[in-house]
Length: 137
Image (cartoon, rainbow, N blue to C red; front, side):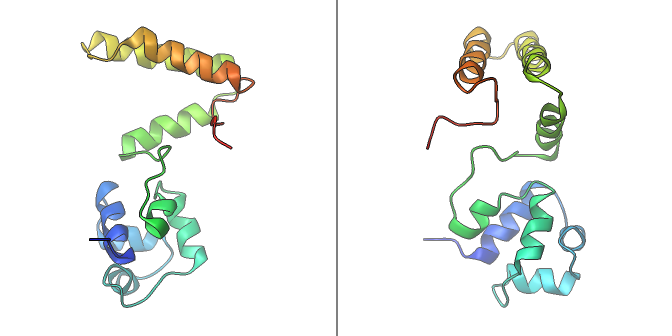
C-alpha cells in the first residue's frame, strides 16, 4: 500500500529523531500545523518544505515516496555530509574520505575499504573532481 504524504512526513521526522514541536519549529510552523500535515488534514507550502530540507529532510521522498540516495539517514550522517561539502577542494574531500575509510577499517567493517576508496576516487575523476555529481543524466 502506498504511504500518504503525512505518513512519509512522520517517517522523516522520526528518522531525524525530532518530536512534532521541534520539527514544526524547523519548518516555521506551530505544532498544530505539524499534526495536521502528518494527519493528512492539510498540506504544507513550499516555504515549509524548503525549511525542513535544510535540516536534512528528503523532500523527494515526501513528495514522491522515492528515497534520494544522497539523503543522510541520521543527524550524525547529515553532519558528515555538511562537513564534506564545506571542504575547500577535491584534495581535501579525498583526504576526508580516506580518513573515514580508515575508521571503517579500524572497526573491522566487512566493507572492502580499498574498493570503497577506489570507487570514490574513480567517481570524482570521472566527474572532473566534483564529488557531488552523479553519472546519471
